[in-house]
Length: 540
Ligand code: ACM
Image (tube, rainbow, N blue to C red; front, side):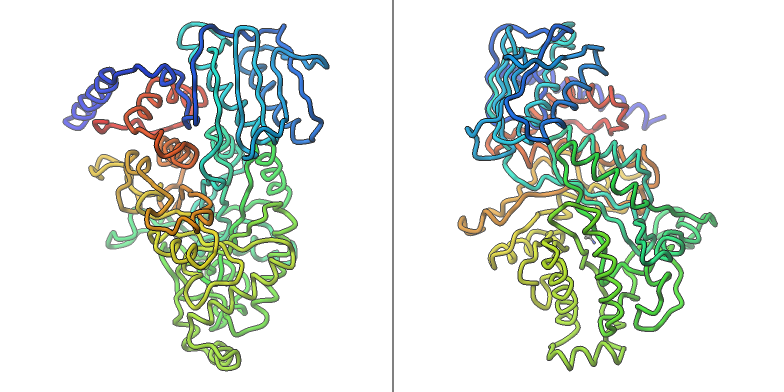
């Protein structure tokens, strides 16, 4: 009971603080998240109706995605059918070379209509997302299907605005993944990093190796409670699932129509017990193995001494690159214990024959071989920052998670980097210091405010290397996230903060104003979609 009162009182304090915020900036009321670069609020409204027409000056095929998104929104939300006209429509979608950044746009609205200009359909899409967000201010004022007159010039700060989802520890069905992509797009994010293989489950159908999903997608049972609880308890229920290749194609197509690139992750050489349970001959010891039911880091990994390992992984990746149009393929590379390689004659033979110094260089040899294959398919390799150890593959991009040090090292040596340090980007961490009041999580503490403070550009990085920082990403590891509701609770609103960090110019960011926009408008947007976001109980 005490907690209920405490929660209630902190909620009242939280609401009260917002009302004392000095709201001179008219654009604050528009509730735009992420905040655009430049917003000017003018007088008057434009009212959408069945009379509203639209026109387009380009026949680029991706424009169809923009139009479909825009017209479906009006249809589903208001029952309004906007019609295309060959003349100038009330809504003009204009491709023009005025913008350097393909994702940038210029949105102008007045009582007589709307124009969105961009150099690429992706820019038009983000203009439409802003337009749709503007409808919420109209709603708030009782002006249904109306938008304020504005002049917005906008473009993102970073090109990699990512969200990750681990479907290995817990499996999430296609319908949830599509909803996740919808929310990514709605926040103007553009990368969905799909973590498809883990010790506890292999989740992607590979035609040449059916046992990956017949065996590797199913674990005997799942841990109940926390990893550190003693004694450990398991639920005794077989658990699993996987995506067929048709389902993967469906998700990729869905994401493409929202300008989201799906980056698949196939983990190697570590976090591979589920694959080894299916094909134990790819390990150093020969197994047998069962798909893991324990979280953590496991010592059995792909054998780097056997040629069969590389043949297998290249076969797997050959199917993966056909399914995903993404330039990047994530190969994991993190948390690979070296103990089996130290003990195994074939791995030691490989070290001797290749003139490698140690097992770290053996991991580097492993990743470089995989990179050669990906490059031969016009793909680029991305991996967690452990791929720096023993020497980085020549064209590799680094995802820096153990802080930003690895990212800085990679950028300084001319490699591209995505920043995802645990300190600001791990959405599996607790959202409150009062852990007892929260559902069980892996540990840590990452508040909404801390996410908002994330600065992907290291201050001491040589400005000449700044272009190597492609952006950042929120990561959602799911050891303890076993349901869709709980996943949403952990993701939102932290993802809203991440979206703004990666889109909005640093000097425009203000946590206080972000929270105001969140509470007055954006939460209602999430409510309309039924998103189970966490209402911050802290005094913010
Ligand atoms: C990671 O969190 N192991 C990349």
